[in-house]
Image (cartoon, rainbow over the protein chains, first blue to last red):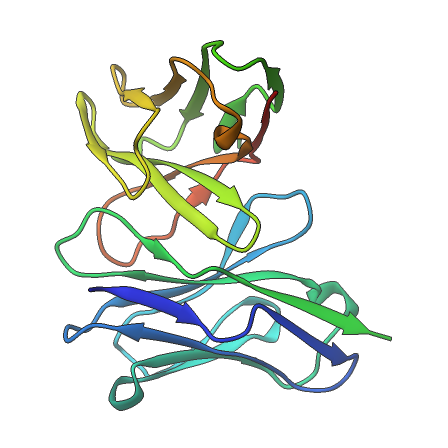
Length: 113
Length: 113
């Protein structure tokens, strides 16, 4: 069955340290891949998307993600966390030919001063 | 730029009552979606629509109905509300399949007592 797994429900980092949010998908077909961010009491906002043009994708606010087909992963990273990065992050997958998206269960990122 | 507008923002229902959530988008998008968000479960697709006059079931459609009579509107109905339907509901739209991004509304907090 097609699925997307976010390996950590909660990640806590100190301000200025790197961020790594992990995402794996299960499928024998290459999907479209996205990361969305949700700040408290807000709707979701697109951070970045995988277009197949490059395996390393740069998004807004200094985030980037690397598509690794051999590992079926699309992990989200940022070199240096900022307090404003505290939010919930969702890895999202769409398989070609399907009209809907599959959301991971989310990873809540906390940033300590 | 209104984008995606959801009404109402908050609602409290008694078990057995009915209500309709309205989603309106002004971007001429073909695709519209209704999700529910619950702690630890991420976003789950209730129903979606790939164009005016069409609807399809998502992951958790039971207890909900939808209609897409006009391209810009996507209505979500609860005929007989149950406490299990207490959730935050998000509407989203996109221009089509593939790599386009979703635009989300700001959510509706629904409590069923």
